[in-house]
Image (tube, one colour):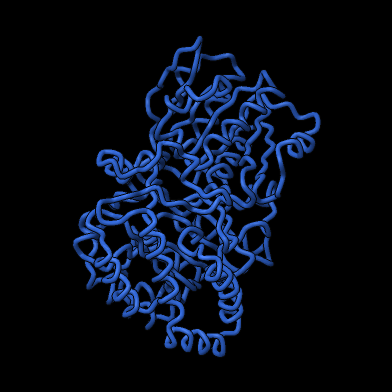
Length: 486
C-alpha cells in the first residue's frame, strides 16, 4: 500500500511537534517525531511510504505534489496541532481533491482530544487515529489493503455513510524495542540540518527512550492525550544501540535530545543507560527533560555519560501554585537539585509559567525571586497554554477563562504563541507583559552576564551557543515579543 505521511505546511517554520506548537523567534523546530516513528512501523510492515516535513523543508503543498511524482497514495496521514487545526484540515481537503480515492486520517493531540468534533469539520476527513497511533496506522493500512472492515482497527474513529463510529481504545505499546530507530527514518526521509533547538549544540537529533509520564501536572498534553500516565521504556541496550547508530551514521551531529516527557522517571533505567554509554565509550553529548528532584549521584553519573544539559519544569516558586497544578514537588527539592546540578557540572534550562490556579502578580514575583536564587543557565517565563484534552483546558473552560473558541487564536498572525487565558487575577495582557518583564530582568542581571562571560572563556562552544541565543534575545527584546515567542 502507498502511504503519504505529511507534516503539513503552515506558517513558516511552524514547530508542530513542540509541546506548545508555534513559530519561535529563536528558530526552534522539532523533528516530526511521532510521524517518523509511525513511518518506521509502516515500512517495517512492508508498505511504500513518502514522508514530507513541509515546515522544515519550506515546501508548500504544490511543491510536495510535484515531488510525489507518480506516487499515488492509498492512505494519507496528516499531522495536526490545536493552533493549526483549521489549516491542517484545509490541507487534507486539497489532498482529497488531488487524490480522491486516498483514505485520509488526521493524527495528533487535537483530534485525539476532540475526534468527533474534528471529523465534523470537513467531509474530506475519513478518520482520526486517536492517541498513540503507530500500530493504528499499520493495522488500518492492512485492513484497507485487504478490504477488511474498519471496526476491528483499535484506536480509530471513522465516518461511514455520514455516521461516526468510535472503535475500542488501543492498548499502549509495551514492547517499544520492536519499533525501528527513529534515526533510521530521519536518515532515509529527512534532512537533519533542518532542525534546531536553541539550548542544544547544532546539529542535533531527537529520540524517545520511553513514552508516557506518571506525574499529574494538569497542563501537560502528551501524557493526558497521547501516551497515558504510565511510563513505558525501551531497554537500555536498545537506547544505547541507537546512540551508536547516530554516532556512526551522522558524524556531524553534536548532540542527542532525549525528548521523553520525563527521562528520569525510572532512575534504574537512567543508570543502566549511563553505564552502557560509559562502557561502550559512546562520545556524544545529550540533553533530557527531568523533574527538579534528582540527587547529586545520579546527576554526576549522567554527566560522566555525556549529559550536557537538563530541562526542568519548575513552573512556579510558590508551593501553593505547585500544589494547585498537581505538580507533586516541593520548593526545597528544587533548591537542592539546582545546587547538585551545578556541582555535577550539568547546565539547567528552567521553565516558569504563570496563569495556573492561584497565580497572581505576587506569586510570579515570588517565582522570579526563586529563579534568581537558583540561577540556572537559562530561564524561560511564559503564560499557561491550555490545550483540549488536558485538565488545564477543562478548568479554564469551566470557569470561563478561555477568551475564544477559535483555535486559530492560540497563535498571533506571525505564528507566535498567543495567550488566550484571562483569570480573575491576571488578564492575558498581564501575563504576557509580566513574562516579558521577568525574562528581561533575569537575563540582564550583571551577575548573570558575568557568569555567561566566564562560561564562554572556560568553554568556547558554550560561549558560541550563548552568543547566538543573545542575538535572538536582544532582537526580541526590542520587538517586545519575548513571552509570546519563547
